[in-house]
Length: 507
Image (cartoon, rainbow, N blue to C red; front, side, top):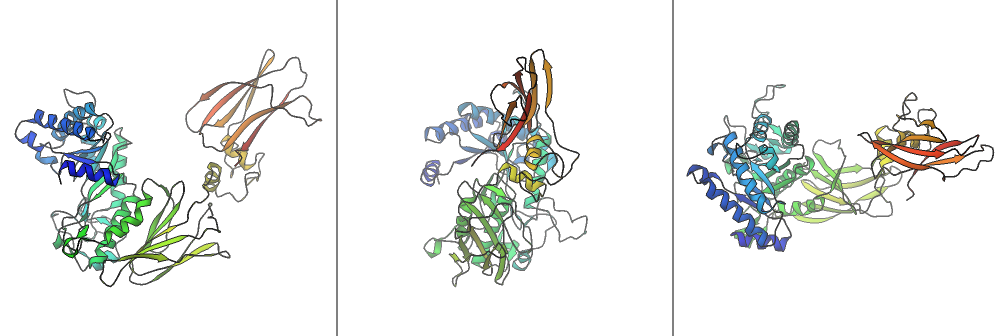
């Protein structure tokens, strides 16, 4: 489609445009300034069409046809600098299908003699194109991506990149990294050279060429592509775009010969859509081929489960430290096969058992399920801290039996399982007729705590007041705490008693 058609599609679908910039011709024909001018004009055209802040990528599987890493990086810098002059809010990816940590770091640290900074200062993200079982023609060729192999492959692997036999097993059939590990390694590499916020994208995921897989029908093709997208969620990719090397009636988005019916993967993607921009919630499965992930939005809690077996699987699952509202009936939707293999999405019964405090469901064979629990209570910062220490008592309990309850340990940076570690204690100094009282305070705005001082000059009366204290400073020492300085005039009082109160913010 033309760029006008594409931008109209973005308008009606509500997506942010992703526009490609080809700098290869400018390099090959020594017309790089023309290429830069075209790129800038393209950005202006997209802005004028009502899409500032769009995504762009420079280059398309041509890293080593434009002179290699250094040439690619310097040409990227020149293009990106001009494009961001037109619209500073755009985000630009560079493409390298074969990036490993070393190549990525070499590219990010490359400099252009005529521009300040490094390539990493101009790049917002890195993108590659990765298929299953692989794209192109790796040498030597890995095994075919058979349906039988897929049933027992967990997690999905990148058979092309890093295609050396596993050194632990020396198994020539154990190729590549998992899609989860691949991106994790690249994030570490980017952070090591000062680019910790570099976005990561697989902008052409899908099937490899048709000779590289066997044994799938229309529905299982769609189920595999749903699993592939799920892997991108689990690994926290920032972007993913579907692009299969084969786009026939069974595995493209639409089945053109059959009245443009949607193929099954679109059902799975529809189930995954609400998880976009959601917060991932830690989850685990005890079954190697029934797995998924959990995600939370401000209004919903979703549990996704792939049943990658040819049998119905009875599952039980429960929540730790954030029990759902038992009065809410969860809504289950399942993508499963149909007689014509286009698949269908149907309701799935999810039952709660109070005695075991668990939910139960029967997942159809070869299916993908989303369970929506509606609004669940969000765990407080204290709850998450308490869970990290596996505390058995509440905020006012004292798991380690020292002088502080659990809430005070949280508020002052103590270890609630070690009685010898009670965190940072307040200090008191006397200056003329003023007491200076300094105490630690969690600096996060969502700490869920209120700190305040109370005074009395008579412990017998039991009357305390929170007036007479003046907060004069807050010193941020980094990390999770700041130190609060208070001054209390003594005004000739013989006795002055001070206590620090730490309380949870009322709901």
